[in-house]
Amino acid sequence: MNRRMDRVNMLVRQEISRILATEMNDPRLTSLISITEVQTSRDLRSAKVYFSVLGDEHQKRNALAALESAGGYIHRTMKRNLSLKFAPFLSFQLDESIEQGTGMLDLISRNAPRDLDGEAL
Image (cartoon, rainbow, N blue to C red; front, side, top):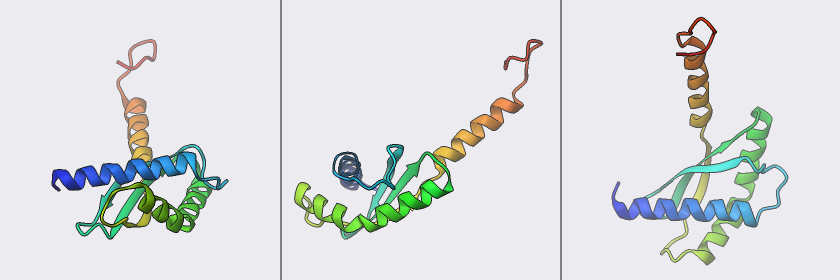
């Protein structure tokens, strides 16, 4: 990916995060939702938005449903606020990499060698 697309992805990610934090009042969107990555197509017509939610499966499903239903609103708001040729249409994907990383760290810490006091070395 080139630098221009990296900057566009970063700009779109920041704008979506701002919209979620300041303009959305959907109770299905918890304060523990974060936009982890955006992958915009080369023609700027579409973007995959990866998000993470700290919570159970029910909260994740609710967050996905809320984001999908708010996709049009987020698109229109981005169109007004960003100086891009096109505001991309958004598709949302749950990103579970943070939880997977946390699970791996827990697994490592449980299996780490211990000293005589039970503390990890």
